[in-house]
Length: 120
Image (tube, rainbow, N blue to C red):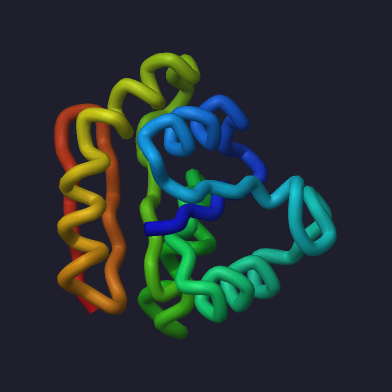
């Protein structure tokens, strides 16, 4: 399971996933870094079987309309600390892994009190 973090996701989350044994890269280390267009980021993720992690609703909209990105974790948590975000992901990483292993196309929405899964 490999992750690609969008521009508004902290590098600390990248490190947390790496510490859990997952491959995780940040947009700032690929393509045109923080200048990368969403459609280029989605294409890159789909071509490399990456799960995008983002707070951006544009990715969710594209997932439903274009089926790209194929694999998306959409964060709906508002302004929370990096420590809280990491804690929530650590609590849910096995569920994300389970969904990744059973679906080729999915959207996972993480809210403060719930995780919603939409399989494509």
